[in-house]
Image (cartoon, rainbow, N blue to C red; front, top):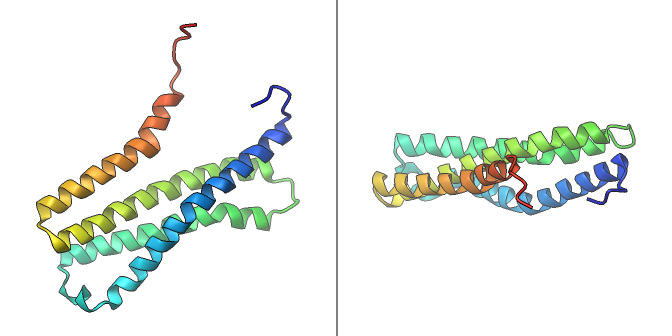
Length: 155
């Protein structure tokens, strides 16, 4: 960030970065959600266990929540266009995107758990889903939060 950047320029840059990040995340969320919406209409869905049906519901609802939170910044921006709400939008949208990413991780892990439990035994499904969950939490949340911790200036 340039030292000469005004707070307005910083907000513009932050909003632009946020919208670019959403352009990356949204296609995956939309594809997952569409896939989950079509699953009950497949012939083999009637063969799922009660556990698998419950996992499906968690995945479907989490994908819907992720979609809502990840699209919300765009709707907010449109509804408040030229109303002087950019600062509030940037900070609120940041929270919404974090919630959306968490819901997306839950949906993806639940979808993988559903498929693996359907195809393999519950031990394999639990290991695979747990590993993916740990990967998402680590890469998306833990690692970035660790980087935010204060460090000693060794220079």
